Amino acid sequence: MVGRSGIERYFEATLRGEAGVRHVEVNAHGRTVRELAFDPGRPGADIKMTLDISLQKFAHERMAGHSGSAIVMDTQTGDLLCMVSTPAFDPNKLSQGVDTKSWNEMVAHERKPLMNKVLRGQYSPGSTFKMLVGLAALETGVITPDETIECTGMYSFGGEDFHCWKDEGHGPMRFEDAIAQSCDTYYYEIARRLGIDNIEKMARRFNLGQPTGIEIGGEKAGIVPGRDWKRANYDAGWRTGETLITGIGQGFLLVTPLQLAVMTASLANGGFIVRPRLIRDTEPVPPQPIGIDAQHLALVNSAMYKVVNRPLGTAYDSSILINGNRMNGKTGTVQVRRISKDERESGVLSNKELDWHLRDHSLFVGYAPHKNPRYAISIVIEHGGGGAYVAAPIARDIMAELLRNEGRVREARAS
Image (cartoon, rainbow, N blue to C red; front, side, top):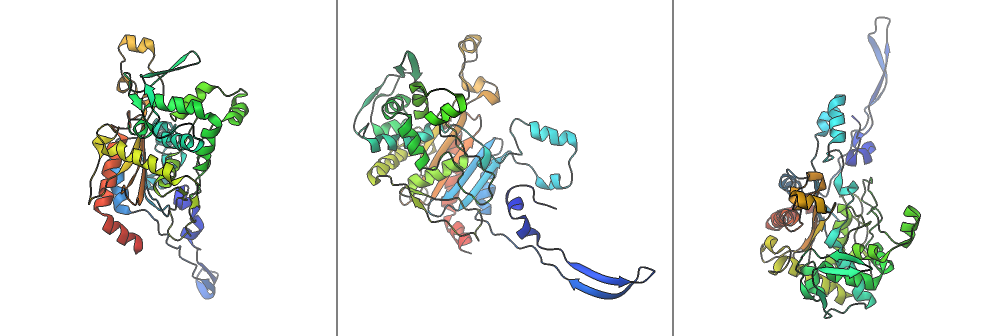
C-alpha cells in the first residue's frame, strides 16, 4: 500500500521501510537446497504527530454536518493540536478499491470530501482581515484610536454605494468598537485613506499570499491583490472601489484556513510568525518577528476581547469562562453573491433561503486564554451563513473542550 496524500505520501519512505530479501538455491523439483543470502529488511518507522487525538475527535464530531475546517495551533511553537477538514472520506475504502461510479460521485460532490480544506481551501477572509487593515491604519497614522467615523449604514464613493452589514448604521465608531461590532463603514473609510499598497504590505508581513511552510506541502498560496497583481491577471488598473472592498476582507483577496490560524497566532503571541508543525520529530522553526508596534497590537487584542466578551460584540453569545480563562476572537461573514432585486421581489429574502452553494461562508478566528494566549483557532464553514451564528459557537465549544482538558493535553504533548 502506497501513501497517496498527506502524511502518508510525504513520509512514504520513512513509513514503508525496506522489504526483506531471501536468496535460496533450489533443486529441479523446486525444493530449497540451501540459503544463499538473507536480508531481513527494515520495518517502517513510526511518526509522532503534534495532533491531540481527543481534541481532534471532538472537533471532527462538532463539525459533523458542515463543510469546512477547524484548526487549533500553539501560538508559540506552531504545533497543530487539531486539524479537521469536513466532510471526510474513509481512506481504507479507497485502498480496497472503489468503483468508477462511486469515485466520480466523490469527485463531483459539491462539498468536496477529497479536498483537504485546511491546506487547499481558499476563501475571502471577510471581517477576520480587519485587524490587519486596522494595524496598517495605526502604523501609517491615517487613523488614531480615538478618532470617530460616523456609520449611517452606507458609504458612498465614486457614484457607488457600499453598504454596512447593519442597515441602520452603528453611529460614531472608534477603533476598538469598529472591530468589536465589525463596522464595515469604518473600514471603507480607513481603507480609502490607506490605499491598496499599504493594505497589501501589511497582509504580506503576516505571510498571507504564500504557503505557510507546513511539512506535508500541498498548500495553496491564496491571493493578496494589488496593482501589479491586477495588471498581470486582468491587464487593468486598480480601482479605489476595489480598495474599499479589500478593506473588509472581500473582493480578490483569498486565504487558506491555515493562513488564518497563523495570522491569529501572530496577533496573539506579540507579533511573531510561527510555522505550522504537524510532525513532532521535525525541528521547530524559530518564530520570526513581524515588527508590529506593541501598543497597536494591544489595541487590536483589546478589540478582539470585546468581540467575544462584551454585549455589543458580534460573538458575545459565544463567550466562555473556563478556569478563569476567556477567549478573544473575530467573526467573519463572506458573501458568495448578492441577493438580486428580482430575487427579493420574488420572495427570496435572506441568505438562508438561497441554495446551499450560494449562501455566505461563516468564519471565526480567535485565541485563548485572553491573557498569555497559548492556543489560536481558525474555523471556516462553507456556506454556513453569519460567522457569529455558526463558526463562532463551534470555536467556542472546541476551545472550551481544550481549556477544560488542558492538563491532559500538556501531559500528552510532553510524553
